[in-house]
Length: 208
Image (tube, rainbow, N blue to C red; front, side):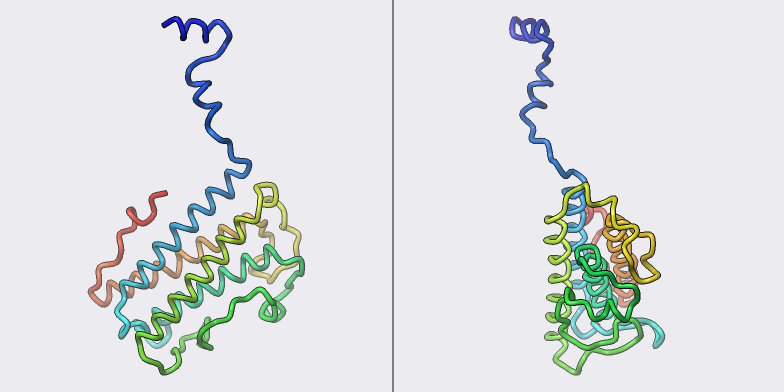
């Protein structure tokens, strides 16, 4: 009781003292983005793991990407968006972007935009290759974010980019990657349902 009285007299409360001991992050937005991308990685890999190797190239119709393609595509796209953010060079169109040096090696030459198939390998090997590529691209994003600070997020709007990324700030590129990942992961989840496979639960895989 005496301690509280003394603290009140000097203008401090117990909560103030507690708060003073909690480290304050200099980059809270970046730290939160990293947390979200780590959870997205875990959830994405759980969805890939849920599909049996023999169904890795399942597609509902000939006009759609296969299950594997969705993940190869989202990994490549995340690599591209964050690469554009970090690179001092500008990429005015898709052609010049494809020549960028920041792209990770892909384990298969499969078309990333039109229906196609992986090379004829053992299905288990293909799943391992696809999974590793997705992990590597997520790790690329996460390690890249760790090099940034909050101040850099609002810039980049005027940097020359392909038409579909015009007007994007650095934060927009990061969020665009996350929403694009969710877009393709959701389609892959519907493929699981079409094969009578219960997908990983959303809520438990997205709690920060």
